[in-house]
Length: 597
Image (cartoon, rainbow, N blue to C red; front, top):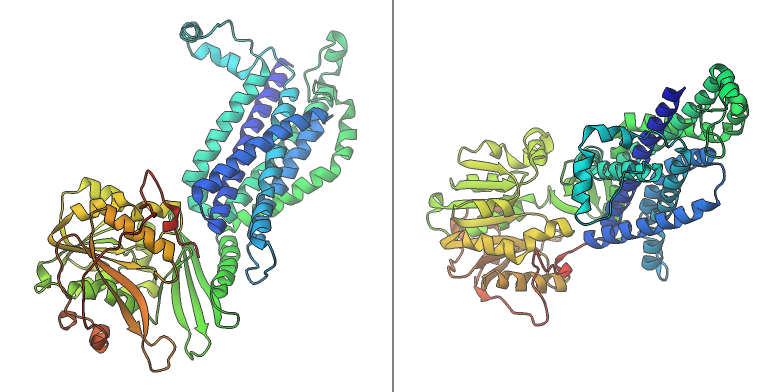
């Protein structure tokens, strides 16, 4: 009978671990979703964790009014299994109607998007008090058993240096808290290293809901079976000794199996919900790829279409992939007034390339700066990013030596294997003078001694906290130090007319890094098929000393040959110093560098 009680304790502590794991992971999912929709990683995570801890305290306070700990713990887990994934759905739905506008919509939707945090927090706050009540057998604890595995006398002496110590009281409350904290640690680590990179947000929240539902079923099954076991096998012992070691009783102690049948009937509705939820989640998780592509693809399609005026563009998402660093969306778009549909690629929320302008963009990024060198084959190039290998294709025409650094090895693998990406890069990943490093460009520049004649920044815009480091004064300073005496850097830029604060922050950041001159230019293309070329993507050549003049006649780009008349009057200019605008630094970030539209 004693073994049964010990097993009950192990089951309950195991459930403590699982529920703590799920609760903290739900909040991490919510934090990431809020970051995706509203920007500001540090702000979103800080507010989410703060609200979560506050609402847990509220839940712990409210738990004093809860009666039957057995049934209420079961209900809590089932409610969490439903509320956790539903909360993620609420956040997504609140941001799925971009064309619906009304007064105070941003404020109201932002406030409503934080309600799931409070709901999960309050329910999670119920768990520890309920579990502590359920652990009524205090004579033998897991931690007490572990006492034989470490030198307790040594530990007490160490603690005695700063504290008044005594023998461990082996109370179950500290035991539950210890396992709860351990589960929270496991939740944060496994979410970051396994769940999110493997499954993404949509499937991860379903996995967590499945774990909560399984915890509920495990608890219910063990309790009902335990009561029946005691009723059948331990009734005589209980009558003789007055001891009960079976399943949990309604008041938190132990009871015989006489009420097991009644409990099965009383719990039937909540158990039915748990079974339905478990089966539903299990089916969805088993088809994780299809679920992720369907939900995320549909949402992204709506968001892409909303970037245009209503009725202006027809968007069809054709494929959706997730790497450890970004979402890769391939879609077809047809813009009103254009006969042909074209294939486009997005990395997260930033458009990467489209059939119609992939050549013009890379001609501006690569061929214009390469035309500044009289002997291009002698040029050493550092390409930061460019995992689609299209920039490498353009560099290959000049026979230059290329060191490429890109953090997303999975996306580069896709660019080598996927047909729709290979058509853009023409197998440039096989270029014999290409040396590719999979890693962080910031770290690479800190560790290498190489110097380069040309550094090409083919990276997405700063759209969240994670990308801010590649737009920091520290990064640009490192980059500047790795330029040769004739070296220049090139980057595409957002329009200063539409993104004024970003532009000012970027310029002051470049100045802080030692760049004091720039040569602004753009590419020109007939985007609306009216026979007139319009100003397209914009670029900066950067330098603190060398000021070579590009010569389009030296470029090896048919696009630039056709538009050569647009490039008269190259002029290096001093970078403007904007007063009252702080540069973006790793240690003192300026969030105006982020463009989240």
